[in-house]
Image 1 (cartoon, rainbow, N blue to C red):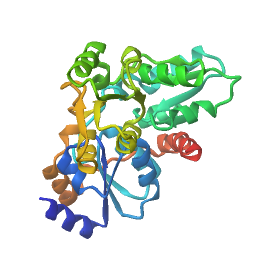
Image 2 (cartoon, rainbow, N blue to C red):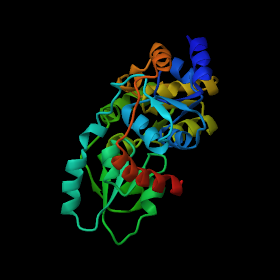
Image 3 (tube, one colour):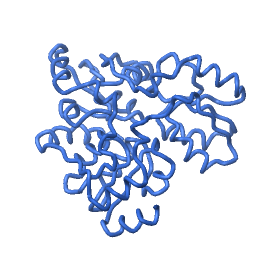
Image 4 (tube, rainbow, N blue to C red):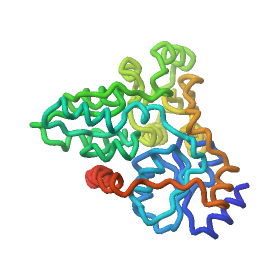
Length: 298
């Protein structure tokens, strides 16, 4: 199957971008594996004609916004993000009207329409830089992840109005889950993604984005780690550091949307050049400004 992907990729002059939460076999055929920030950067600079995005819908939309002359394919068209669906453009417009002078920071886990209503985007990897760079004399509305918003507030000291959204996968992780994992692996460091609840984040030895967690675990002299993020990160960790031990904090840390893309769907997508993701030109123009402002800060 991987040979078929390589052949079709060459024929189509395609690049395959995969989020680190994807299945191991999908990560292994990708030209680049990373988090939302890294994938956005790759989409913006690729010279390929076709971008095959192994991720979820909002990620493919961002690629289409950043590379309007490219064909952007999402092998699993129904790969969505429940958190992204928790904020709509209409609801955001109404909330903006209630906060005079507000500047909206949109997590990339949002639709193109929401990005179009925002001032700047961020990822978990660059959220602290983005928020710290904003004018201090205007209020901030952060959408849609309340947990990430809480962590940003605590780290930067910037007060923000936070939307009541959350990641279904990360938000389910509890303090009890962490305590059980620590009891089972007392020598392990606890690495936590900031999409987790504040009380879970407080139990961490280190907090960072997915690639930040991977980088820390690979560079740390420690040999055992409890990983509190989606289980897809275990694949690159175990490949790059086979001498270390990585324990998932809970069995529930699996995103069904991220896991819905298979090698068979990647092959079919390249064969049929479907499903293609496009963004309305008016929305794209507005959303592009938010993404470009983010990329300029990185």
